[in-house]
Length: 78
Image (cartoon, rainbow, N blue to C red; front, top):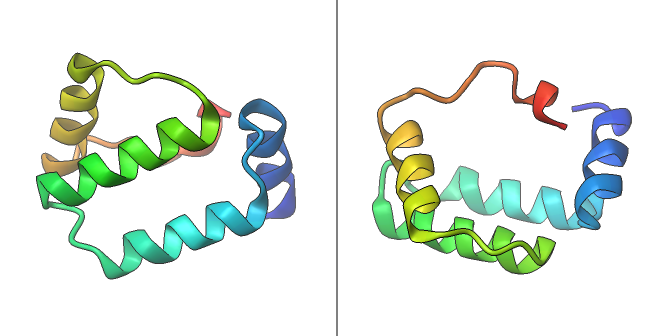
């Protein structure tokens, strides 16, 4: 990922590059098809960004990840 993307994410979420990289490392070492792992990651991101994520939204995120429905270019979301 390039620094421009990190800057856009940081500007939008107030989460810095090192925190993003730490979370990415956690994701790489975790089982991304495991519901509990995904819930932990979602909750951590919610806390970091100060944005509440409803249970319904959590379920949509988890189902998208587990069923390989995540867009290839998430960069456009930032």
